View 1 (cartoon, chains in turn green, yellow):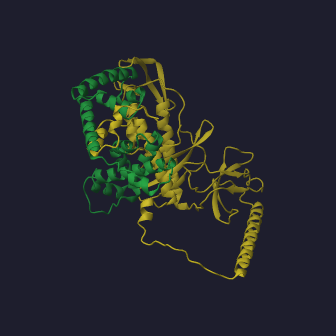
View 2 (cartoon, each protein chain N blue to C red):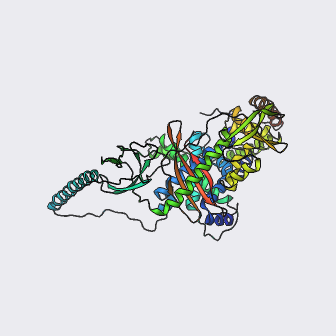
View 3 (cartoon, chains in turn blue, red):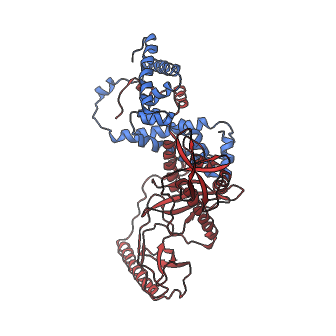
Length: 188
Length: 347
């Protein structure tokens, strides 16, 4: 959906524009938010964050803007910021304070490690490529099972399959993934 | 707590990885609907409260900082305190006086469908409330009070206590206490919208009846076996609203639902277990569980968010003795006023 289309639809019917925006970007926004909050927030918090993203866009997107291109970038930015806000809100609850003196402050190193970040990015890419090489529905099953932490029955509903089939395919796909990654000297 | 696994490495990935993850199906339809309903509730609540978002606050042009110290004489404090006490006493006294007065008012000897009272509640704000008469009762007309707009009608039930108004046969008073936080005078301009909403509510009952079997009758001697599922489908031989063919049903739905929302009725004719099947040009239906969702209370729908071609109606659903709030989003798509979306408390 382009900004021009959204703005035109918003002027005609804000509710329709909201619905269409939601239909088009819900999955993407969920993926962005989940990627940030996966190990910090509960599923309910993540869903709340997703709904906040669309509410924010509804109220704050300037429909008079001259920009007419794809809304993907705007939606992505709002989603990331909302996710970061929620991350800070959640982690602030478990904040703790400690005294520091000048000596100990100087010994604290920066946690920014270029080499580690590069390796991590490379591993992410290899894992994604390996999962995608399994084809559908195995790649979806593995991502849903181990990344999104869904149950077999939820995956079955998503893929219109039976839970038993999902479990069976998951086991086989995992084994196959292990073999593919093993060739790149990566072990699961 | 999520179990640790090798896929944890995908967390906090860069944009290209996230884009690839988003290409994989993420949410089921029920999960999407759940999130959509949640977002709509938040949206409507914020619309009604007209709350500024954090972004707007940050973008405010003017900021104030520092402390302005004001010194005044001590006697000012006593003076203002005294004035505040006097105002409070006068206000309370007025409220009691007006409430007592309304008890003596003879409203009407006949029974109009809707009456409006203007009352002053304890905080001195004016409220207009509607009383609708239950015309079923003949010996004494009983009434109940539908309160005016509350700030969160979708999320919470407005709470009020009222004694039954039997103003048509005797002049007892109706004590009304409301916990509404805003007062809105319901003007006659909304009468048309209320009427449109009531017609659509009726249509919802009919469409609901198509799902739960209350709309149709069928002949159990005339059936065929649906090959895909092995289920029996029986010939439809009657309909309360004369919907005897697939076209009749589709046209009825399309005349009351917008194009986008009518897709929600696809399971009537499509999917693994359609409710209706046309066989040799004749409509058949399978047995369905009885018990519909849409059974409305007698409360008038509350109309908000009126634009040139849309409005929102908040309706009360009698769900097996409980009262649920159902929000109807209504649009004029050029062919007439139709339901564009429905959000309800979880059934």
